[in-house]
Image 1 (cartoon, rainbow, N blue to C red):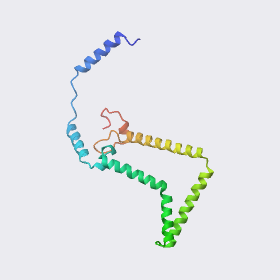
Image 2 (cartoon, rainbow, N blue to C red):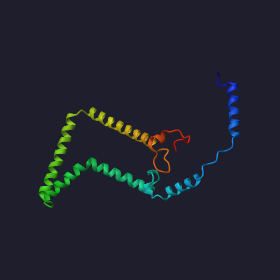
Image 3 (tube, rainbow, N blue to C red):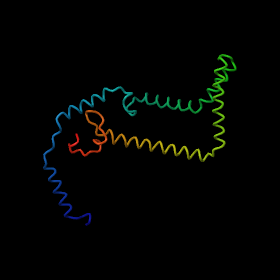
Image 4 (tube, rainbow, N blue to C red):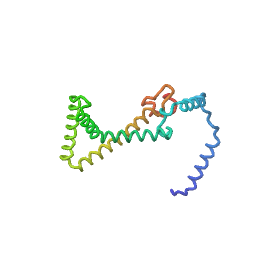
Length: 174
């Protein structure tokens, strides 16, 4: 059969004609009120409970800025905290014993990191970081799939169980 089969075109035209002749199906009773109620409920939610894209621009910028600062503190914080504690210990403004224990722990962590970096080749670290990123993407994809299977098709009673989420929508399972 070619793409220009006249029998196929006539069958498609007949099907289209018959489908257009069918009367429109009425919506279920109460659908409009449920839809309007859900729209009102979503509009009444505070901005911080909405998706990130619907936050005000200032709040999004503040969140991103705070995230960058926290990541920076996580990466560089060890050096800054250690320097501050050494300064306080040298100046005598803080009791010596707790500062000494914290400095000892920070020094041990720093030495372990230095030893680890000198023993493990950089290519292994890059491979491990790439594998971790791939695993994170897989985790995100599996979470999205699980959400789609478990919660899409939810009913008024709450989230639908797995069997309802995968069941055909012929009305037998509702």
